[in-house]
Length: 328
Image (cartoon, rainbow, N blue to C red; front, side, top):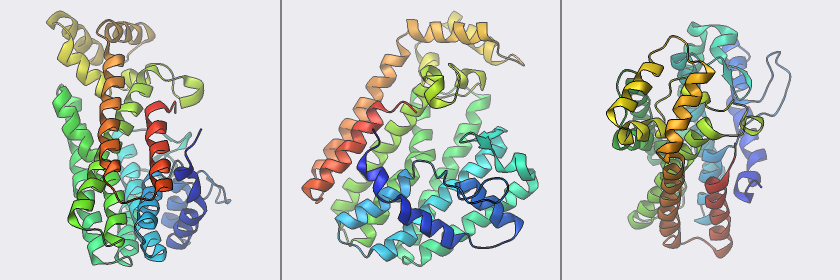
């Protein structure tokens, strides 16, 4: 069941996104399509995704007594940065689909998709500046880290990713914006440095758990729930957590087998089965579950030290439990 924290702020975030993306040019239409406000024909729709990051901004700001009008600007700015990164990621990875629909570059071409992403990043800066200079500085720093993480992820396509290298990458690529979400709420709520430290610690732990869970679903997820076939990340040669741990744990002969499979022009079903069987023998899935649990234990430890209300801590605990168990 979707936690309350991810259900409460959807309408507010949607209004903020519509206000931020009001232009009528091709690029604005592409941005409204990408975030899920319109379909490919320009008709209104609502396919906004989980809205995890902006919801965390508004939740944290509310718990700390911040002005929620200013907080909405920061939340929308963060969501726009996240979506800017997805537009460019889809180009770099040549992903034709995003949330079950054609990606922006497939609809409008690579050149216009780059322009659309650039525009979204600029609009994000403008939105966040309305929340204050300190909020904008935090967002810009997180954006730098997120882009560095994406560059590290791309580099893994040409080199083997170890477990430690994977964590360094994911703590930037995924963790930076989730940390930023809680930091923004803290800044707007006037939190001191100790509280900000626990907020970013909570956000970093949530980000790591979120990405490892995503990676496990990319190998062993139920296709009817995830929209992806079993072993989809193997077909894409993605150096996700299971792949990184496989190269850490496998004997040399088995590593060579996996290298040969990943080097093929086309990975067929038999190849996918071989890699999954090897992962199962090395208990990669169980190790991933342990890593998710460890990250969420850290998240709970930081949560215990935050000055949230009792109801607020219960809602955040619901989110932690959801991240531990989600199936899509």
